[in-house]
Image (tube, rainbow, N blue to C red; front, side, top):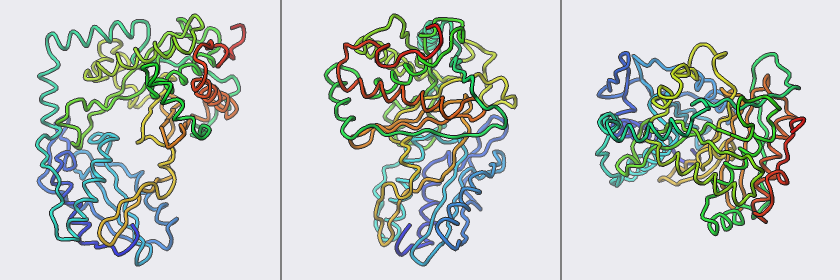
Length: 423
């Protein structure tokens, strides 16, 4: 935050956001959520000698665990650097918030702060539905014919693969050793995104589907012979869905998002046209059934995988590919000063902290549309994969995206040829 900051107004605005959204005041008694009337001891003020020191301080604070029973599950640290330069770090436990909730929190805070300093009404609509209301509705909705219809779809779609689908990807040159994280990033050539968008619109597909197909093509191409019990070109990728299909919850703070599995058969060396049509059907089919939480899908398809992603035994977690696409996953958000909004005498800019978590399944791909380009961030476990292997994997995605901006009659093998021996 640059410019003249009203600290009292900021604290009032933070309390106002917490008052609006019940989940921000949540604590947990066992499995039962119990919101408190008002947050206490969640706003802290300190100082730092430089912007870099402030970011380092906030990064350390981010690593501190939350007390689910005692709360609070929202923390705010105001770090003052200079008279007209401060950083505000906001942290929430993931149990109460998804990616969209971050946007809700920031947008509400900026509007409430601006109104507080200007002495005006923020003009925010009343939050008529809280997350607990949605949870109660979900329990009543997922019964009978609805539950059976959704369950049948996922049983059929995931027949032969797990709800946490093994990627079948191994790197013979992986260094092993201590677990760590690294990344390989690229941005497509300028003006590629408009070409992809135009081609997608003409063919009735989406840019999301094109990037998703590119990831799956790279997975299939990098599988070694015998790495999967089924066809190596049968690819299932672990992603996520916002699960905010009801308009009433579009701007509600809570954990609505759910993991989701997108499965596509790339066998038979299809043309890009055929492959992208299949990918679109797979994506749309999954998104239309996103209201059945992945936890329930897991219990239906393979109960032994229930909870393993967050369990105490990492050896039970298979190697899988996690792919997400959207503006909230934009790798550019890790750079300073991305986006801004003026509020009174202070200007707020979102700043990314340089935190790189270790991908649970070994590979996590974050991609986003930006003006003229597609950005791709491939994050990997350094004991599972070597940098040359990941660079080659990322290059396969890049080749697919470049080819998809041109002639869709070409075959998959001409765009992303298999690297496995004997294939």
